[in-house]
Image (tube, rainbow, N blue to C red; front, top):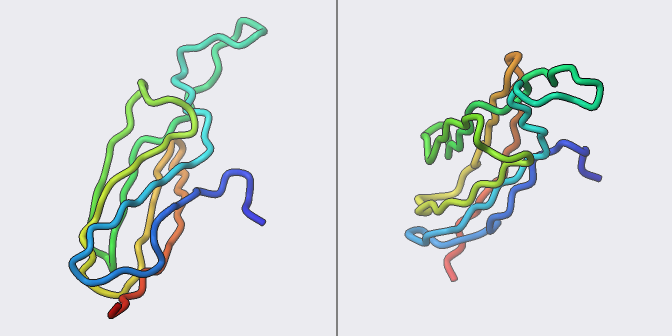
Length: 111
């Protein structure tokens, strides 16, 4: 069973060298800007993801800086060219030095 805030990754588990694969990421997070007032009239504290990075075997594939305009539960889709068997590592950095990571292996097929 997946943890409630565990990142979700959708991508193929196998591919051929040279293929272009689609990778979809989503993480549950409130993305509070620190500007909104709660029901009690008090400001809701800022709590947002500020940076996303995807690497393949330590080499950066894509990165994104998130600003206050990003909605809750950020979703990101991108493409990557397959260069070999290895592990994609996904990292979200949030306020308060919180870091969430997950990894997904990719295996090369000959077919």
